[in-house]
Length: 386
Ligand code: FAD
Ligand code: UDP
Image (cartoon, rainbow, N blue to C red; front, side, top):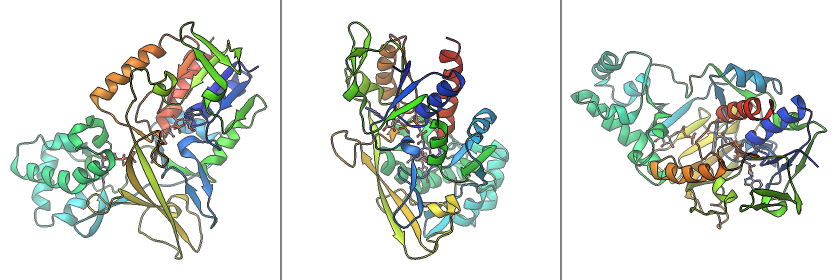
C-alpha cells in the first residue's frame, strides 16, 4: 500500500506527488474525481486541433526564482507577456488602467491628472482603486470615480455578484491603477507559457513508477474517515500513511459548519473560421454583455492555425448540486467567509497525518505560482524531514 495518498490531481497534488516520488522514492496514490489530471490548469486540443484551456485562460507568471526553476525542469517556455484591453466607451483600452488608458479615455484632462498622480504617488506605482477613491483632491477624486465606474463596478458585480467594497480589498488590488505606460497585465520577473502545453508538464511530473492515479474517483468512493477516533480508511483498510487533501475543506468535514461560498463560471467556447478574432489575448467587457471577458487562445499559445478558438466567461452563483454551476472556481475573499474557513482550519489542525493544501483546501484565491510555492514548502517543512 502507498504511504501517501493525495486527493486531487491539480497543481498542488501533482507537485507533491512529484517531490515525494522522486526525492523520497516513496509510493504515492492520487485520487482524482475528474477524468483527467491538471485540475483547473488542464489544457487539450479541441476537435479543430486548437489548444484550449478547459477551465479558463491560464498565464504563468511569478516573482519566485525557485518556482520558475522548479517548473523549468519539466518544460521549456515561450516568451509571453499577457496584454488585456478593456472595451470602454466604445474603445479598446489597456487594462490595468494606466497612463495610456488615461490619455485615450480622458484626452483633455489627461496631462493635469497624470501630473497630479505622479506628484501624489510617484511614477511606476500601483494604486489599488479602493485606495485611489480615498483621495480628496478634486481631479484625482474625479479620476477615481471614473475608473471605479468604467472599469471595476460592473465587472465586479458580474464576476462576484457584489460591489468592489463587499470583497476583501486584495481582490480588486490584483488589477491596480498603474501610474506607468507599461501595458502588460503582469509585471512579474518570470512570465511565459509552456512551449508545448500545461498538460504535458503534468504528465512529465507524474511519470514515475512510484505514482499511481485513480481517475473518475471521488475520495468518498474509496476513503472513509472516522472523525471520532481520528482514523482514515482506504477501501476498508486502515490507512496509516500521510493524506494530502487538495479538495474543498468544507466537503472533507461534511459541511459541518456550513458551506464555504464560491463563485462558478460557465465557459462558452467558439471556433471561428478566421485566423484571429481580437487584437490581444484577452478583452474585458466591464459594462457590456453578461460575460466578463473573451480570451483568444492562439495569442497565448502562439499556435498557428487557419481557425481560432475564443472563450467567453459567464460568472455563476456556485451550487454543488447543479451541473454547470458546480465547479468551485473562486473562493470569495471576504471577512465572514474567512471566519467560516477558520473553523474548518481549526478542525484540520487536529489531524497530524493530513495536510490541507491548495486553492480549495486553504480557501485562498491563489495563483498557480503560489500553489507551487506552497506545495514545495510543505514538502520541505512537513514531509521531507520526517
Ligand atoms: P485545483 O486545480 O482546483 O485542483 C484540485 C483538484 O482536486 C481538481 O482536479 C479536482 O477535480 C480535485 N478534487 C476536488 N474534489 C475532489 C474529490 N471530492 N475527490 C477527488 N478529487 C477531487 N493562475 C495563474 O497563475 N494564472 C492564470 O492566468 C490563472 N487563470 C485562472 C483562470 C481561472 C478562470 C481560474 C478559475 C483560475 C485561474 N488561475 C490562474 C488559478 C489556478 O487555476 C489555480 O491556482 C490552480 O489551478 C490551483 O491548483 P490546486 O491544485 O490548488 O486546485
Ligand atoms: N476587475 C475589474 N475589471 C477589470 C479587471 C478586473 O473590476 O477589467 C476586478 C474584478 O473584481 C476581478 C478582480 O479585479 O475579479 C481581479 O481580476 P483578475 O483579472 O486578476 O481576475 P482573474 O483573472 O483571477 O479572474
